[in-house]
Image (tube, rainbow, N blue to C red):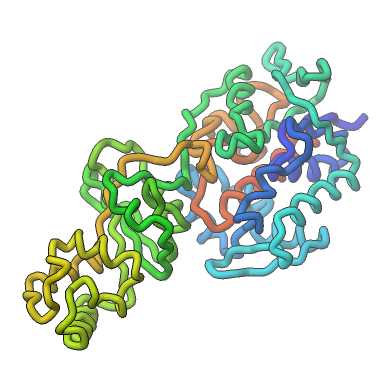
Length: 413
């Protein structure tokens, strides 16, 4: 008689787990609280869905922010190449873009969701749009689930409910409650890959300005060291900073005590200080009779000039030919290390992913099985796992889901 498996959550991890359990002959039912599966997956990558990163094993693990060793077995069973092959076989052509990010050729996240749902149907997975109210746990074993439609018995249950980011898509922390009922420890969820709030008002003065090809570094005053540095794109907003660089930086920030973190933006990373100073001298000679405020248009975006001039302390109406060597060096320092102090994260509901979740010491890394309750498995963001942007978090979801689905189908603890 076939093993029966309930999968709670019809997102990336849930659908992948269901497919792989069904492929091994299990009778699988997916419970999705929304009226359709994959609501969060449909909006990832700005609606394009960065399904994975076309990278080596070493690069993948270098992009996991913590607990990377836990994923060794999951990656070895189903890595990035496997993810790419899986979707190509389901009829979704993929392409590799900058940073080895992998997207569907169509640039439509819906193609990824539709392919997963089609494969669920092909393999006989039953998708039920109903809310799971609680797990049925008796004598240290999961017996099934209680839903809005009543109690249902299953041999195994996979919790793939996500975290608490983007709650309107259904990620409201249900999995943490299920885990706790089964005796698990839950590491308190915090936002990761989330915009940052400025401690000041510089950003508000340039809100809407997007910078490309800049270098961002983050200094931690408590540890007295740089905790993040990378090159790419960022965005000034009314509250502070956002964009790919900033989201990645946020994964390195922990306790937001006052004055702890300062972000430094290198506006001209392609130029060392000597070369940039020569560029300044050239521009100053070209515009020597202009006011300082009107002499930087060749160097900076128009929106950034006035705020940067104010920050420099140089009189905006001072003639360029009267600017001193010390003032020029002060401007040079700003161009290479524009400081922005931050005081907090935007709300967790705006985070791309959640840091924290079910404690990994209580999960078998070889099977994704609970060490607290027999027949219980976990996959995806509900676990205390997260990574940087670039497709790595979806790969975590897929890798853990395949392992959970196959283990549940074979009742491997």
